[in-house]
Image (cartoon, rainbow, N blue to C red; front, side, top):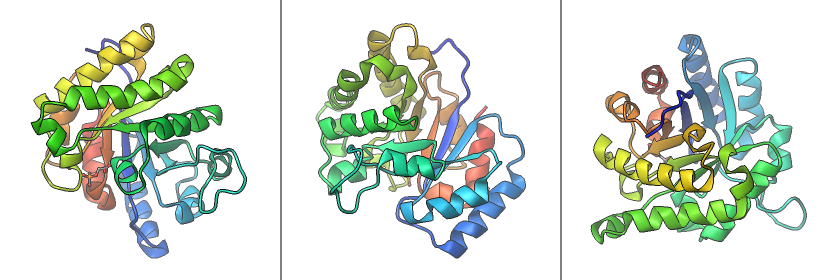
Length: 252
Ligand code: PGA
């Protein structure tokens, strides 16, 4: 259980959604009503729109994030974006190891750990995603899976592990409307917190562990009230300004 009061983080994950016009409308609606939020706020946008969103969000409480980055510094890696390139666009956060990348792009625990290292080396805060599938949960493997995923990241990044953000995203809850109950989420967050304590005893309470998976305006407050839930990684609901703003308001 976390004893230190830290600012929560609400990060939108737009996934492969948006257009110049839609992004502008969404950002304008957010900026109009966001005020001075009690939490940190970010939107993780598709790479082609980084410049647009950086310009729209400049000087505002909304930080810009990427959805992925290369583990490599530069060179012959067609289609990839390096941490330094993201830095050029003012990127503060990068989602790493999202389950959709693990599933559709075959990203291994080792690659996720290497991407985490690339982000940290360049001053980008990685939002490291872990989470079990429905089959793994039903087989009683949830703890084992999330611990294995986080252990790979700790193994490579142990010296600066306090700089990461972790996101627990049960795969069965992503985009399905089936949220983990606050108790289910808290139980896994406590496991992850204990693992972080083991790796970084002095700093583990300061590491933010976000919940993600069908978090929305209606269920956010209850999830965010759990002692080890330090924010949210929001997919679908981050595309609707009123919903995203309500989640932000719930994070205090
Ligand atoms: P969701 O997505 O909120 O649409 O379930 C969350 C995520 O995949 O990060």
